[in-house]
Length: 443
Image (cartoon, rainbow, N blue to C red; front, side, top):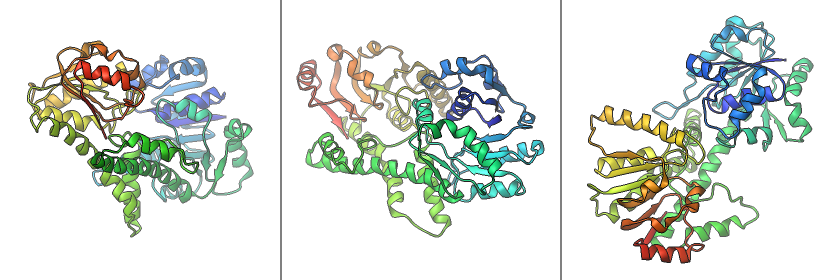
């Protein structure tokens, strides 16, 4: 079976690699020649655990190209393009429709078109119409997490599919692709288009709601000096509630949750409905950065001029180089505009490279070359001449570091990810007191 993948960015590259791993012949198509050139040399264009090794292992089965004509003679075509949000939070389907229009001239009209992109309700129906009702269009949303994408692909919680008709030939092809998962008894939900489309938004918005819920409780905890860590732990212990996404911190971010929540809000509006819960989730999450920053500015009496602040973490999550929708952008900007001097560190060197490109653009676009931003590649480089520490990443490597040598002139750590464990580190925190750190601010 010949399978074509349209676009090779982030998790969509995983789509091509895992299909190749399952011994399918893959044609992966992208419009960026530099990206294709790297992939042809089996050099991954994204930072993902195990991807480079998997590329080397499967390269014989993958053809990377910018030639859209090579979709011809495909049995199945996966549409894996980006679906960003516009300024109003509505999903921009331009890339999806561009991809469909580009492949149309080269179709034999018997290919199965699989929509992996996250798309609003009725998008698959529109695509079916664009294809003149000739091709089978299957809705098959992805649920992969960055850094765990390969693991998630081979061991998914579930697979969601929609088949318009019970065509034996089409079902046979679908079963051939998903046979690996059928054998592993992975649950497969076969439903209608609009349900499949809505499942992805509902799942992400529910997880975003869990994050926002515990952040709201954390704000009350701040007021009454309660311990949010213990509150979260007690909630986790309820067998009806799963512990993931129930940690209080700066807020949810990344390439999926923010846009999917906003898109779902817009889909409610388009159908003349309002959903106060998810609207409040979006509003609360948007204010969470200001809530955290207020702790910093309050501690310094709104005067950060000349303060040497160490910011630990720039990627939106540990073990990735992805800076999209990362809350650190807002935090760093506000600190710079308050004339703080920043030292920036992340355990992922590729994330620091991406940050360097970003901050150079910020400096140029704002014509403020006198911003002081020092990017360091070693944790120990941060231990000198630092007034305070701001933690924006829940990287467990932090707990392995030797804080004995940490000298913070202003005696404060602002822990935006609640990664430092007070109770487990009582002796350590007492030593921190001796070293001059008298409190950890946590949300």
